[in-house]
Amino acid sequence: MTEKILILDFGSQYTQLIARAVREANVYCEIIPYHHAVSFEPHLKGIILSGSPASVNDEKAPEVDIAKLNAHAPVLGICYGAQLTAKSFGGLVAKSNKREYGRAQLQRKKEDRIFNGMDLQSQVWMSHSDSIKTLPTGYELLADTDSIPVAAFKKIDSGHPLYGVQFHPEVYHSSQGKIFLKNFLVEICGCKQDWTPAHFITDTVDALRKQIGKRRVIMALSGGVDSTVAATLIHRAIGDQLTGIFVDNGVLRKDEFKAVLDTYQEIGLPVKGIDASERFYKNLAGKTDPEAKRKAIGALFIDVFQEEAAQLENIELLGQGTIYPDVIESVSVHGPSVTIKSHHNVGGLPEHLHLELVEPLRLLFKDEVRKIGLELGIPPAMIHRHPFPGPGLAIRILGEVTAERVHLLQAADQVFIQALRDKGLYDAVWQAGVILLPVKSVGVMGDERTYEYTVALRAVTSVDGMTADWIHLPYEFLAKMSNDIINRVKGVNRVVYDISSKPPATIEWE
Image (tube, rainbow, N blue to C red; front, side):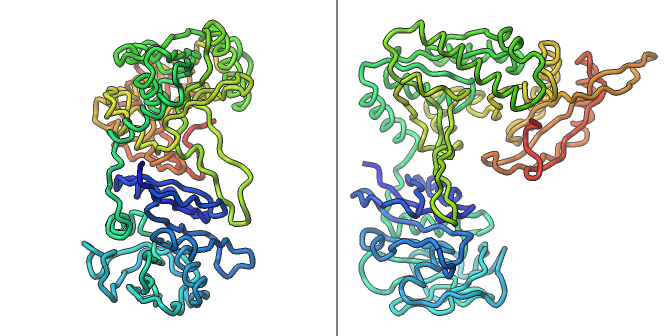
């Protein structure tokens, strides 16, 4: 059975970064809210307590029984987790004389295997207003900074190790934080670091065969990396018991319907392509509100999918490309969250289909999905495609969606995306696209006056889409883009570049 690290989430904005760092060390981990019961399975190797925006001295501060956790496994408390540990065992935690946010210099006071391979001094990232003033009896100081007396500590007595650190090793600003976390995983918890893409594929295929048996699976594919990798795993497990459906909703990128179907054929996926573009255009007619367009596309997709499903016999399961960020329960520091993020790979399929879900990627982050895809032999061009919104170009056309406007935007988008590839810029960009604005302006082409559309180019860098920053594309490249789009795309005479970050803007315009 796969060894596991458990991360208890107290509402920190960095919790997913902890999980990503653990996974990068080839160790499997899961995040659960702090108020959930912990299952002490034999393969549980260690527990990490996250940070929190709360103070341990708040009247309703989040709490867990750290002694009980530590009786079963090594424990590492990070920031709030360290403060809670100190307070739980009799230490003093109080407001700092000055708040400590940002970079600090960690100074080791004692050698310990958790510091193996680290410098005596190293840059760390702090984010706290409380400090540990006094350590509990039976604990020793390992490190401090110029501003705080306790930056790292450990329990002295025997039994499972217990550590606390005031800094955040999971963020990249902590220059040797990944080394620190790896030491906790390997030196302290004894993890073997054997959770690899090949290991995941073998375990997942076996699990899928046990879950599915001889039953048949239907799956809606989007052409994106998540649904493609999920379908490939399911197909590897059950072969032609899988039927994939890929719907052309009329707002895909230019020639994407054929290109995606060709790729599916190349990798051997049994996928049926449905050209429903005219039905979608008819359903979108007259709609200008972004939410109305989204609902129209989602509702019609469900209708098309159900029509195709009805033609198949003995379908009992529904495959989906759900990934881990979509299912992690969010934690409120004001109490347990009552909502869990839900995600359906395409459109949001209704419960009344009465199909059992098959979600082979629900434990993976996006970057892990890409690694699995490459290990499965899926073409890199498919694996490294930029994210593309479910409603497609419909939310990149501000105003009413018509076939004419879609074709205009498809042409402009193709020029932009292909140029990014040709100039070696595509892989440096997390997501890129063109927005058709509901704005016409005067232009001059030769001796003729024009009155045509304006398009906006959008290119951002991001990790997971939660935040994003605009890419500083070379001026020469942007100038060529403007010239090429205006010359090649009839109906466009002005090109602008969106330099807004998220927040406050969003990546998409609608």
